[in-house]
Image: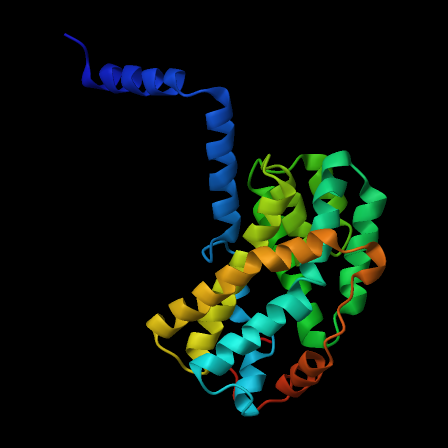
Length: 249
C-alpha cells in the first residue's frame, strides 16, 4: 500500500511531466506579472492619489463621470508619456545589462517630478520595491546593487522586477498601467467618495484605454518623452499644504 504523501508527490510529478516547458514558462511569467500588478505588493502605492485628492478638494472632481474623465486624461497625458515611456526603455536596458542607460533613465524620472510630493512618491515606492527585490530571487545580486546606488525610482525598479519575468515588453507595460489604475481607482473611491460599483466602472473604462496608452508609449521617440503636466504640478504643490488629507500625494 502506498503512503498518501507518496501518492500525492507522484501525482504532482505526473502533472509536471505532462506540462510542456513553454507552458510552464508562460504560466510562471503570467503569475509574476500578476504579482507585480497586485495592490497587495508592499510598496505603498495605496497611500498616494497623485493629486486626485487635491482635485477633489478644489472641486474639479465630484462625480463618478468626472473621476473617470480625470483618470483617463492622466493615463494618456501623463502616465503614457512619462512612466510608461521610461519603462519601455528601462526593461530592455536591464535585460542587456546597460547600466549607464539605467542611470540616465532614473535621473530623468527624478529630474522631471514637478513637486516634492511627486518626487517623494517615486523615491519611496522605488526603495520599497528594491527591498522587495532583495527578499526574492527575481533579480540578480549585481542588478540589485546597481539599483541600490541610484536612489531608485519606482518605474526603474519596476523595470528590473519585470525584466526577469520572460514576458514581452508590451505585457510589462500593461502590468504597470493596470497596477496604477487599480491604485488610482481606490483613491477615487475614498476621496470623492464613490461606491465599489462606481469604482469598477471606472476601472473598466481605464482598462479599455490602457492598450492604446501602452502602444503610444512603445512608439514614442526619445525626444518625445516628457512629464509636462502643469495642472497636476500646481495641484500637487497645493496638496502639500492642504488642511485635511487622506493621501501622501
